[in-house]
Image (cartoon, rainbow, N blue to C red; front, side, top):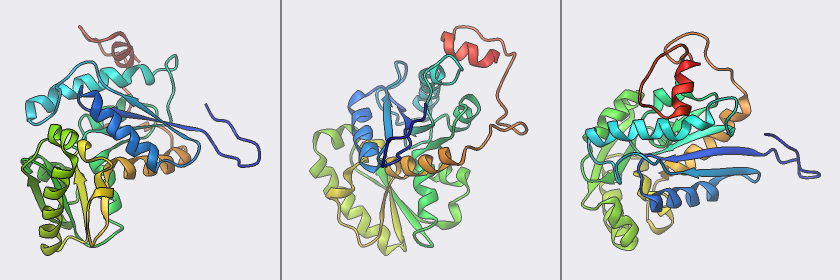
Length: 257
């Protein structure tokens, strides 16, 4: 749905912000960061999946989360469903990104992908700070094609739950990681984790800090405004005529086309 306000001529845009895990507090954190970044007239619609892990910290949980995310967004994909102009995957592993692009009739971005794209414009090399291990992020950045611009990856000794319970303590650890990444040549730094959304205001950095939620909302506003058509060739062509079992009704309809 699009409308024009008198005088100020603001075009309404709806961005679905889909958490990758089932922790509603993280959804709310990301939604607040998304709304703070959004342009006037952009509505951020938060959604927490009903199926999946509380927090994603392993390959197994990441695979399970992909199913839950596709089930959650499927009602927005069909002509009879509620419509949105873009989808932001609020999960720092960009879980189910390619599948979501094949499912949805609107632009879809992963939050780390979005931050990396902005990092390409802010300096030659970027760093990423996250919770715990970094190997899945190294693989993700390579998958997106950005490895040649990566200065370093650092995982702090904290969890997403810590970020919710003790944001000040986690911020101190992230600040220390920022100092190290800048020394390694990072000219901008990505905050890699949905639970880090909105934390930039508490941090100290001599280089730009890139919040994937804020970057994603702003990029989606531009992508939706371009009005690009869905692909008619290639690996992201919409699926049709596929048979499945045990899926939710909306996702099953999407596979049938």
